[in-house]
Image 1: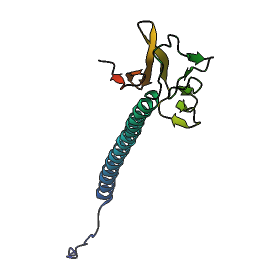
Image 2: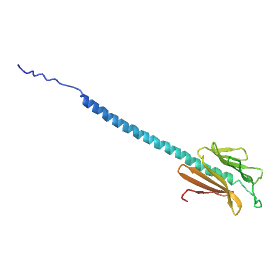
Image 3: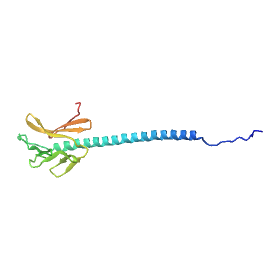
Image 4: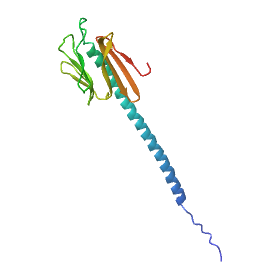
Length: 172
């Protein structure tokens, strides 16, 4: 018997080669997906931090603007400054020199809120945790002190009436 000289030619990939290619594609695509997910997480965190930073800048400017309008006469030794009830809202009289005009500020369910005597309500929804207390120097209330608790940071604002505030971080 003569051996046949016809060769069988196989075209295409073997099962092993195909499975290997599929595994390589699977690992490559999962690495890309994890990379994209990581970038999106970082982007969301940076966006959130940027919103908070912008809100803190507006918060500081709004406080400066409104507390500069608290003009307590020098002869007034006990100005009408009080924390109202359990809600922790600080009421400051003598807005623009008028004893009957009261500026209210403090933490509410909408974040930090400021209510001017003109009825303008200003909310800072990302500023949700902290304390507001009168700032007393030489037994005279000369401003307010605000402590904000933000993530892993504590910010202290000392805001004298009619002047620029001092802002301190936890390390200052």
